[in-house]
Length: 390
Image 1 (tube, one colour):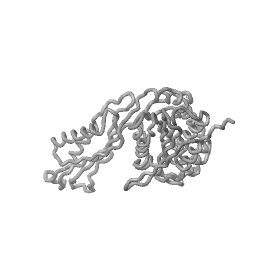
Image 2: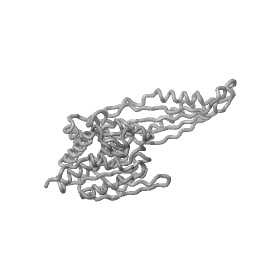
Image 3: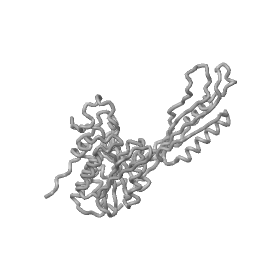
Image 4: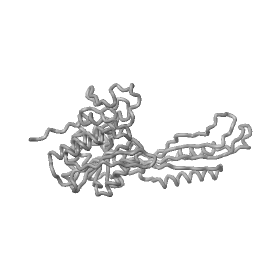
């Protein structure tokens, strides 16, 4: 007797009802482990810890052991609900209203997790044993520090022979309509904190003080006016945003002794952490030679820039999306960071999931039909992947 198709809607409802506010597991990974293990997945619950950070539970589950190996990566942890009274539907009740499933994580990204799990179950039931293997990597740390989650699961996968050939991260990638965007990379992020020390003095006697403000202002003006690059086919021009300029001085007749500024650079793969640090050091040296001052600078590395070059894998996913939705998805590198930044060190990776209009918002939601359509797209990707020669 043929099995009825798996419906991702009740799966998502069950996941939303798990209060997995990062880093709490909330029952979500237990639910997925039970669901997948009954379908023949070999499941591994992985708990990682590090001093000063919360313990994090993760799940890796794999069906089959051969190649090619396709992995879906996602997370079941969610951001806090915020002001409860502002929600029109309880954030953890998973209520359906006017064709939408409401709840924290509906779009980011329990919806993708439910859709892929349902698609994988249906593929396995229809196919049985197949050449290759299918896995899911689910973390509870994506919305948190991202220290004890995907990055350490990947290390465990490497050490235990589970590195995939290709990976899909289920982040909500689409902007206006399901199918309009696939993310094939992300910009890098590097933050700086620059301080100039001077000598405090009376505003009436500026020659007796050493004012750090004009020095830092000259530097900020230089870097803010600079054009780092022109962008390219897949990346917009790199950007620099000044986020603070502070002197901590409430008085109008006192020259402060210190001025600090913070700024963030979002950059394409034509740059790297080292080259950008060198550029900032050079700009400081120019201003210091003109105006003097005692300068100090620190940098915090966020995520490095990366891209999965369009090819057979990207084309397969594009084709599957277009066949299911009628839209040829745009290949994008926009947005902030995701766990794809860790996966890219091990295998080609892209991001595809539902629309992102309500992520992290009050009344986060996903359309019932959009969820089922996402499941259908994942199902076609899985089927096409294991019938193709990539």
